Image (cartoon, rainbow, N blue to C red; front, side, top):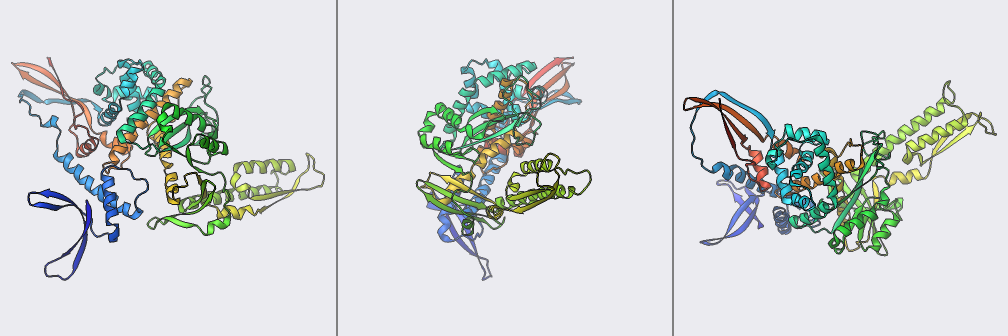
Length: 624
């Protein structure tokens, strides 16, 4: 396909109109001809960019994930064009092409039915469960469980645990209620739905025992399904909290909660994903686990599970919390490349912030990214600054400084008021707590407390409190919104290094999905292996979620799983009851069927390559 400029003129008018047409060459009986794919309108794109635009549209339509190829403006127009093409194709195919199951003619069966007897009962959601179960089968998870000695009757409960975490996330007790009272998951699997709560717990334990085999299988299977390059690994940690004391579990510890739940014990989940966002390996640590001490164990575990990955010269991308000097030396010894956020600003000075060059700019959002690079030996160092991060850092710093100075002023004023702390030693303790509460702000202020007498003892009172800004204050202000990237990939341009690093947001999105859509938090279990299995179920559920979203994105559909799940929830399975007469006898009939899929349902099923009909009809007749 290629772009050509078309000039048109209305009859009786001298005004000319220019359009860009996306066309392709086709063979006909009359020879080669051009077929119009899409009218692009009249975007202001220079002629020398036509070829690049056509290639970008073709890459998006074919599902190729381009890392560094196209100009942002060209990519913006290409995504818009590809979305129009895909939406038209999907709409035509989904609406016009009704499932074969509905098209198959059936022999007519006429009965004398009492229309007043019609009744509908037992509605169960089937749309989201159907999609998730199809992905489960596509990944071959059941085969792995069978090969590890798990009975087939238990696999249906494991499917309910994982798919329940995707469709209606909650605890195992909540999942049991959902699966047996509100969902058609057991109808889809063909297994009776009467299960005890203990069965759900025991099946979760069995599932955890297959962790190593499952992650190895899923990593290789997803690579084959999506032809993943697996050239990069993104590594990060998050934590979740427990809603109990977990006295029988030694792993949960108190630490810094990312959800601000300092009142609860924590568990830490470490995760490695590739550049396309597919999980590769996960591990559960105690709640007070130091981030920097997890890298070596995670990399060694991944390379032992997938030796082929180690041979591909991978690049590890991680934040400053993990990028210690020891970890970087470990990666060098393993001959693994790295792109990391350096702790501190390295050799960069405040003067370097004045002559940074712009590598990315979005005028609509008033957003830009600036960098300054420096080459040292076999490494590249990048000082980066973005508008968004600069505004965020400034807002945080200004608010903390305001609160810090207000509390200092209150303490100072209290020296002359009744009922306030006045003792010299106590004032120092109070200032120490303030420094602990506002660490980033307090370190740029010099605070002096003047005692009332020269010889200080336990009864000495403070006379005054003085504070001044250090020279470091101006340095910190100039570095607001800045961070330093460090890499041994010297062959990459500055723009490519930065673009690769910001892909780290994909692992942050994975954690966010697990916490909000997959029931990662909170944990209610008392025992260690039960807590571990609860979190592992969320990790496997994320595999299915990411495959669904990736498959839809390949068709230009960028909706999240939460949106897809809500749309499909209206596709249900239900029972129709009625009474009819046959040979002068009144009989009671039941039909168990799926509601007809709506247009949006069909579009989603079509894009995922699924049939419109999750299950066929079932009939039952009783004599009255």
